[in-house]
Every structure is written in structure tokens, then in C-alpha cells.
Length: 118
Image 1 (cartoon, rainbow, N blue to C red):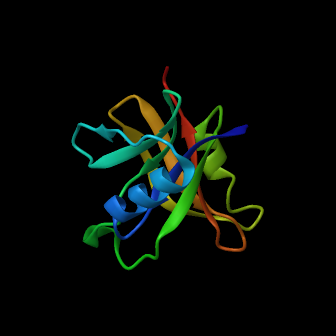
Image 2 (image 1 turned 90 degrees about the vertical axis):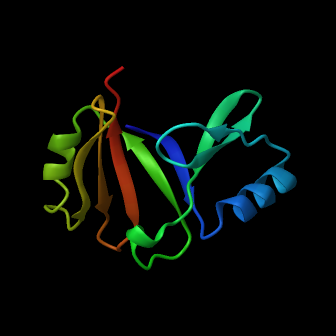
């Protein structure tokens, strides 16, 4: 298992993107599609995604989320409660091919597990 992706969830995606690109000298291409988000990119390689917190996400503070790649999302999610964690975002498919779930560790820190179909 390895950390495979990072997501930045700010109140203002534009301000956060401007801050990171100015400070770190990275590019930030917008991604067309049904979800409004921007990539943080270095030398043509996407390193993270910036997606603004929306009203339907509830009252959450700005945060970063790490995604861990696993062999079996369903199996890993089923095991989270035994060591004291919890499932927070239900198992779901992304575009019908990738699978993920949002979990919390015993201290309440959120993370996601992910398996790509490709």
C-alpha cells in the first residue's frame, strides 16, 4: 500500500490555487468535466487536486486528504472497525471503473482508500 493521491479542499479553490502556484512555482490546469477541480502540476505530472468545499459537503473546515492505493477496497473497508477506525464515506465507484471509500482512523483523521480498474 502506498499514498497515491492528495486532495486539497479549501473554501476558495481560486485563492488556494493562487497561493500554491505562487509559492511553489507549479502549474494549475483546470480539468474539464462534471466536477469543478484544478490540478497542481509539476513538470507535466499531476501531484494533487484542488476541489472547493461546497454547501452540500456540510460544515467542514479546509483540509487535505490522502488516498492510499489498496488491492481490495471492499475488503479493506470491512476491516476498518476492528482496530478502532470507522467508515465515513460509503464504498462507491468513480465513473463506473475505479472504487473508493472514506475512512477515519481511531483519532478521527480522515483518509481514503482507492483501487483503480486500470
